[in-house]
Image (cartoon, rainbow over all chains, first blue to last red; front, side):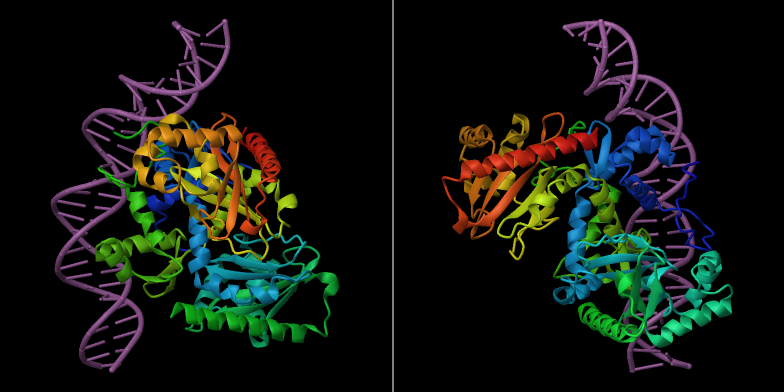
Length: 268
Length: 268
DNA sequence: TCAATAATTCCTATATTTTGGGATTTTAAA
DNA sequence: TTTAAAATCCCAAAATATAGGAATTATTGA
């Protein structure tokens, strides 16, 4: 009877037999409407976009506004609310990965031609949680941006260290993307490309995500040895130097290792 | 019982008689537990802190984790989740006040001895939504920090332009704070101190919030002429110069005016 | 000012969801 | 493997959400 649009961006929750979105998610998904292009939403618009009835949409917006997640700009028109900013601050202060990343801020934030990204794996999304350096450079993927699961050094450095069962699910769900990301056209090839990365301990990619740059990334682990994210550098492709890569990679692996250790300390 | 759509500005977390929190708020309030000091929470801990039963706490954490608002660090231990970072990015890209503030970034962000804050009024909270400049300076109230409603130039520049009925409610709920913020010990004095600010068009305060600094702030208005926030500068108190203040204030009023105009453009 | 129109809230019965407490299963530790 | 602890499952009672329309409240334009 209610909304048929179970928004499922990635098609991720693969074998979701019961696609029954919780009432929480149904309500929160209103917030996903707000983008750079659609910054202010009317109740009417929310009705149409989400397929809610009037009374439901009015109730949702009221509750979300009461919770501070929406802000009423004027009668019946809403923007995102300030509680998001507050939560984000709490996250910056409390999240172990963000805090561990902060450890490197002094030595990385002044970089001019190198942008540094610290990304985390959440469900099957890779998301940038912190960014340093790259002064004056335009990086398409800033803090909070979901990155493609299968493209770019950032993601590949994570993928390469995932357990088999998780990789299998990814292979099943994303075989097309895997092929187009040059990770192989069958399970064996896929496994093999990842094994190469795993054995080197880092991933390099050229212009896979952003034109004109190359990426170099190493994994970050939790105390159990599970990969939870990666540290990556993004540099102009003109600066690419085949002979120096190994040394640079060593540095990044070392930096990522320090993040892992700090993360361990913080999670204890 | 509840106010008409003019959202209840007084909030009055004081004397909440019928504190019937919605189920949404009940669930979301779990996230407020996460602080710099308590970064990781177990289900057990959440039970104790919030007074939930086992099954409720497990259900809440599961739903919140499914929604991406919590992240399971390991069995039964949670941190804040990445969806907060994503929403924050969406807010940075879409919120009219934040975007309007961005207009001034080029000319303000290089300031060394001056920190610039753009704050908004939400319910009865003043919250910093953007921050520029102040390179190397330690400012206690960074982005996402709630600021005291009655102290500091930032808040006073907003208060002075609130409609009477709203001020009355604030006076009733915060008479103690008003007195200690030198805004008067009765309604007339309160009104009068605010009228002075309103007529000058800006607020100045010395070391009211942070030691060793003074603040200078001007209001930001929405297209209806309602005050929605303020722009303020924070500078070392050594740099305070009585004769120069008026000129400086003029500049800030002008900058705040530009934010109001840009806000208007974005909200239309 | 007014009426006309649009936007929002209110209302209610039914359908759905939430809840707590304990039983059951899973996981971690020894 | 056994044992203890943690997490999930289960279910009937209680609470809440829902749709759709009626009632109320804002907004607009003369």
